[in-house]
Length: 297
Length: 315
Image 1: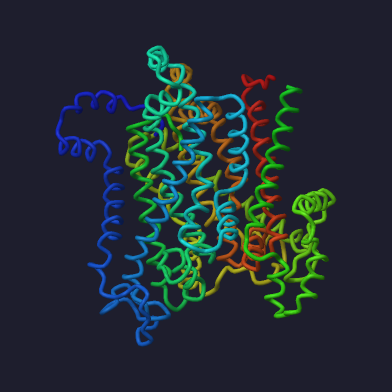
Image 2: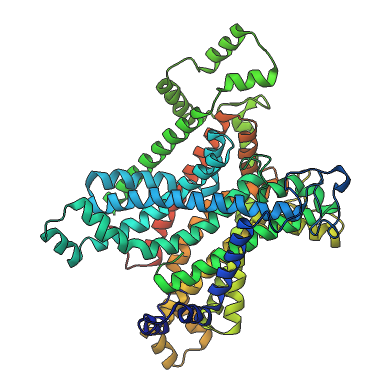
């Protein structure tokens, strides 16, 4: 997967002038798995956007008559102990998962890019300090750091976003730093300096845009892990608070005891998490092959 | 080499010092100190008694003094006191370490036993149906939350075996224990094996294009020898790295899996301590995890030099 594919390199230049639909067709044919991933991600996004249209129940509305209702009838995926409709909860859960996933990935990338660009471009003591900071953050497993941060900040959506974004920072910072180190020695940077541009604008206008390719690849991969970490945090009861329908939390409420009595409460939320993450991973792999075949993730 | 080692060890100390400060500060952002929490739990209200408790716990001293007291205690092997069970924390933690270590060991064995050979197979048959299937399976390994996989396994046991492989009391023999732990280990190890497999595949693909592989084939070496002796040995370096990192980072997967399977290990203890807001214990456990990760990283770097004679650490 990490090998540059001669077809990609050859086909791309010829494809430049082609219309959007042709390059789309090319993408589907060349990367069928990536296209499947894109379709899954699109599906989850549509589910989140049109959640109100495709569900019949309020995801937080309880109904004692429907407690632990089996799948079928009014509740296609059954209902939980409090009689809340599973389908509605899963559809609205997509909003939470995407909000947390996209929010924390964006925040993590913003911080990571700033640190990586600064330390790579300007070097010196700044670089030294930044690198040690990244070492520290990387010495703790993602989930452990997110757990401690989420416990320290308290349960709320914003805090969960922050708690997940910080552990994502070092990877982004490292990748951006190494490509900045390479870019700053290139002739076009020297040319910009020769025309009298100041260092900050060179870093922002000439170096930063060139780090975009690895960043896109990395961000897609991190979106998947952010969604997984959110699910794990909520599963452990330290993530998204009630009443928001979070996929991970749905599993914690229904965990071990419902394995026997109400398997639908265990199967569907997990399926939703896995599909969403699987989609981003498939898409991420294809993007990596296109943008940055040598990057190993 | 000597200077490199010293510099490397110094960096480790700096990193650990930084983490200790980070954790210490983080856990003091929490609204309410441990005295408040204990008070809430006990339902006592007297302000004088609360103040007495704060003095007893050293919470009235400046934060720097508290930090030094903590690190000094750690250095002496004093892990503090868990407020919930009212025992020295070390007594709670020590018996849990072997359980988690066995689980992690089994999960890693699972990861290597499946990840490496399947990765080689996938690389050797690049772009065949087998390769596609293996790639999709490995990607799904990275996508399934390990706690869900654990729950599915439990469900399958309930449906078809009629019993649940849950750690209720300490199994009679080591063998029984390992058999019981192998099920959750598979749930955690699936993800690691997927990572190992993906990396083995991409690393092998790079090596398989080298000239010396063609030479080996040309001189008539059997396919198996070429793949495993010539190619895999040279593709091993990144694989060892990822295995090392996974070994240290396995804690993340263990946290949820130990919770699902009710295994009395260190990782679940961390979650429990966080839930009970027993922050002195959390602080020590996180520090312990960081020390393990930093040491494993160091060992991985050292293994490089053993595996690849071309690598020499210079100053």
